[in-house]
Length: 308
Image (cartoon, rainbow, N blue to C red):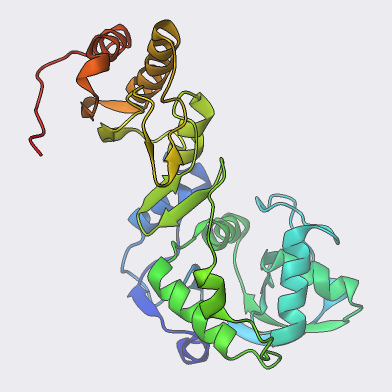
């Protein structure tokens, strides 16, 4: 496999480099990072980053190999997928739709597959006898280094670009048709949120939930901590407007205190050490608010008056 061949597959970045030595003995927990640190520009070998995976050119070539002579290794860190597994079936559908576009990498010296174990399994299950392979000629340690590199490298999505790409793909679907769905009339219908609804709004999230329950914070924050809380809890004044009554806005004194205490305790747990909290409340329930606030572990530093 030469550089020209790889360029047909994808955009690449090339680096003059020596193939990784003794990567399996690396002290670092991140084997790939340790491997890249050890690369030295002392030979004609090439490390090519191709989107979310890497190929180490040792150098290599392509050839048509019989499936029966290709052996899998027993050290491959990837899970061995089986027919029926979600990832197996996804890969199988992809290969059927787009063809065999990502060749198996085979080490001529050991007879092992270095990359493409799952593609090989699918080809075998489909009864394919021969497959085009990228052929390398490596010793066992270098083979393992390449296997780690191929399995370890992963990429993060650019979510904005991914959203645009998915929009383009959906727009290009051959079987799309007009189903008479009236967007305008649907948008005019009244909408109601229910407990448990979670919306992701760019970098933000909005949950319809109960502030007195720990699971609400877990669902919303997923163990992240917040730096600022602004809360407008029910004032316990039995307010009723055009939209109706406010839930938990008419409770006896002790029950309302316990309601506030539970909410404040959860907020305190979810906050970072240097976080701040601002609470809106009515003066008629000032004592309950302040007592629950301090009993939850907060320090009251001041009071601001909203002059309407």
